[in-house]
Image (cartoon, rainbow over all chains, first blue to last red; front, top):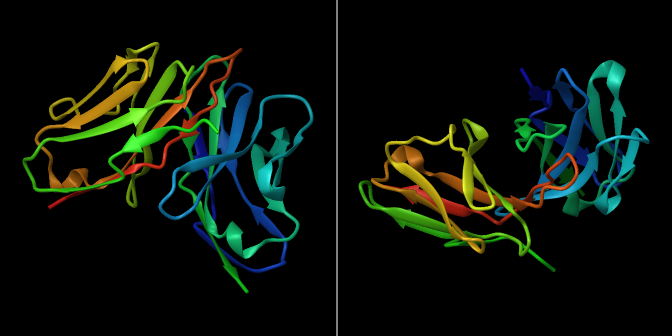
Length: 113
Length: 115
């Protein structure tokens, strides 16, 4: 069965520090992978997606993620975090010719000045 | 800037009352999803439509929930009668199926509180 695991429920970083949010998936076929961000009181906004090709994908707001098939991972990174990045981050997996996305439970990011 | 819109943004009601939530998908999108988000369960898919036809509503409690798309610009989610356990944020998302994937764009949500 498909599943997505975000091992970290809550992460705290200082502004300007680097960030890595972990995402592991379980899926039999080649996955389509997504990262969404949810600011308080808002809907989910797509940060980036991976379908095929270059395993390092660039997204909005300075985020990037790397697909590692051998580790079944799709970790999200940012070299220098801004206070406005404080939000909840969701990893999601889909598949070829399917409509549904399976979402992880989310990681809440807190940024200290 | 095309966006998914949802109304109302907040709704407080009493147990037993009917609740209707509305969603306007992005113009041209042919797929609409309804999700529910709670602290305990996270993000759950309730139902989704393509070209206004329901494709999957297996995540939705059938006895009290119903979802429809009266036209291509409006999707509704109705709860009758509502119960306190229905308190949650309900999100609508839309997408335009292209090639082999279906990217989803989320609305701002309706925060429902049932007393």
